[in-house]
Image (tube, rainbow, N blue to C red):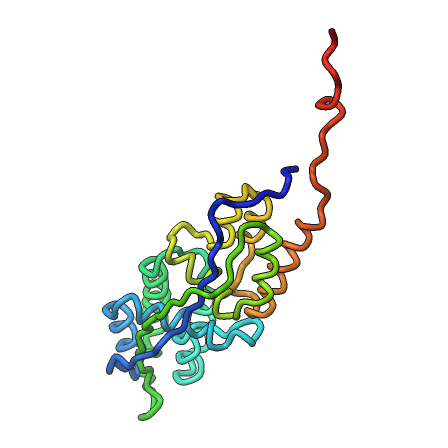
Length: 238
């Protein structure tokens, strides 16, 4: 077991807020929805698959993405909504990959259920496409070691937890979060980094996710530090 160390490079906690802007695009049926999903900018797909999680972080499990929510609640296509809900968002490290899977799911369903194309939303219930404009701010919290990291986790906002656990996976494009990357690269805490990386953040509320992170770090801090072995203490024979 490695002795708990101190990093030369601090982990700096950031937070993020989103401004939603209407694109002026809307859909009244599956065909129109699919067309726009194929053509809108990535920020729109991000908005409707990730911003929903941040807005409803207090629900557990979190609701499905906006597309699944609208297809189920407005068009009444519960089976397709379930398919979209079951897409494991954590598997995709780019918006492009996630968009392709959403398109594939909707196209396959439309081919098998042509009658679904005849369903239209009533006026006022169309799907309106938003784009997400992000604003990122540095918080006053930094950490050079696990104790400082543990203290900061208890103080930062849930938006900061979201930024480093969800947003980072798409930003880094390596399927890893900011916490795990720093713990592994800067503190050589590979085991703790892997435990955090293996979490599925989409199955927890942000508050619940914070609690899990804190407990994982507390467990690591409670472990005894490495002591010199008997072999290391033994004096060489003359």
